[in-house]
Length: 329
Image (cartoon, rainbow, N blue to C red; front, side, top):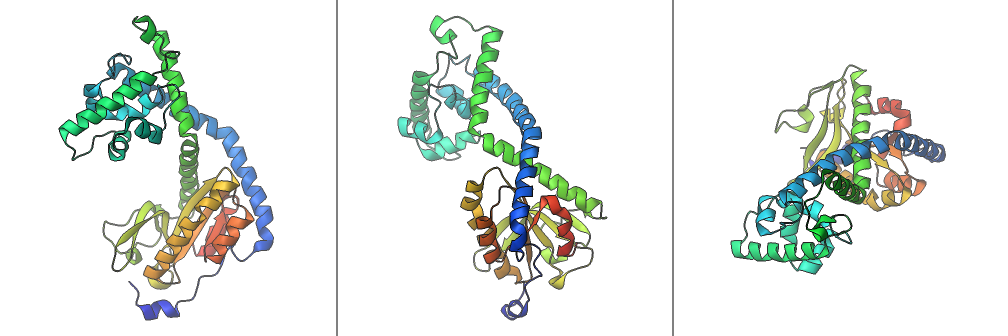
């Protein structure tokens, strides 16, 4: 950790793109084109792959509830992870907050079940009462058009079960379509950065647990590291890529990269304060010479770029990835 005096005499690193607004318009257009091309080519496949896996999960939930004919407290206790599927089996499908509002059950209970588990500490009697109320709401709102066997009292055919599972899976995937695309794009961006580094002789090697950031071995990189900050209150800041250049930089600090993609201009402006908070915390912990770079692909307009530049944040466009070399790599 650097002293306050050492931090004061640090000089800010050379800018890569943040100080070149005359290039922003052309870069924004090129980045939007690149994202759109990727989306049209690969996003449908990412969505289909997720839907296939989700359909299997829906079928498992149907089997666990005897095709929704035995949706009861015991089932939810044994299979709490079925709740997201069951919310999509109703007419209309229920968002988490709507289910909580209708049933009056605890938000913590629903949040835990959405993650596939029950709360660690909860009174068994209270748990049973809340699950019973939840079952009542879900059963009352089940979509009989999707599950016609609930009306006919007949055993569903394999075709009926497959059809119902596909519909519910589509509902689930539509509810999380943005995260599906965002996660696929993030994996792709990290692979692009990894390939860029490997071609230049870097090797993927995360630092040892508890190893100080400055002691990361030169010529190595790692994905998704938690960087400790804070003096009185210790916090961990998640960073997508951490790279220790072959030629060590001032203070032996690695380069930190945040991979970011966006499919529209609106959400980027909503999320821009997150990076500003991160850079302030990182500079407070490691000094002004810390290099924190955004790796951008997609809809990042001039308003967003101007805000980040004013906060002392620089970026590299994916369509001009060679700019990373200007960070000392």
